[in-house]
Length: 381
Image (cartoon, rainbow, N blue to C red; front, side, top):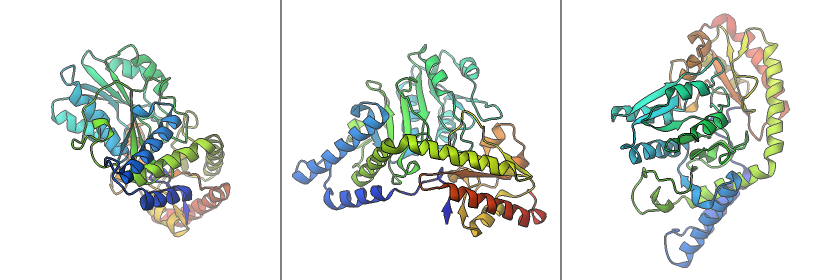
């Protein structure tokens, strides 16, 4: 089976699995305990925090471990909303955010917050001018993702962050779950206050992530209890998962430039091959886009039918974000770009990872052509 659904989750690196196994066996103490086993576990936690800080060019005190991207996004948005509700109750985000941002914003609306959902252009990109127009005296938070998980569109985070420096009381949160290891991250340069990561998107384990929080900035914790993670995220830390994530981050540091180049070459070959198949449309932008995601539509064909046909040929792809893949409705992300419902409902997302090769790409292109020719006369969107 050739796996081309790396935006949903990635295959854990063998060294990550080995690190987690050894950590689980040797460092099973509670890092909050005072005895030797507790101290040893705490040292693993400290080392992992240092590795993460180095990879993200932040201080260890700015790294907070969570259960993944959803918790990081929830903590960032709700944490700001609760802490600064007396300052204002206006939040700015975009129409194409992940559900762990959009659904949180909708929930906050039920509690009296006002949310502006910025539109995007046909490439799925937010306009800085729209951000400027949306700003109000009571704006407390702007939350914009870095790389869109369905189209691969890179948002103008640098421009937005530079502009928001004019408003020191407005906090800037970035969902970078699809970014790390795929495109450069310059958190300090871009003026990002809060940033979310999830380990299973970069060949680490599931169930562990990071919230980067700018030093000295206060937000309300989502989870209260034992006061772990400097009081921001209570709960006994997942030491094996955190150690595995740190290992994945270290591996990315060693090979990031090479990996980005390989992904870009494979994506370009995918583009060239798909453009030669009649009836196939590439929805992802060609420029200012991540190198690992390409979204296509096969006109006149139900995406789910094609997905299962490709699976029978030995390929795993997806129709949309894995968190909402079972919905029969067209992707809100694609519809937000102005795409027709028919084109959106015939879309597939192909996402590349560290383990993929150019041979995988060539085989996929052959399978796509074969499946399309076999199925198209018998299916309609």
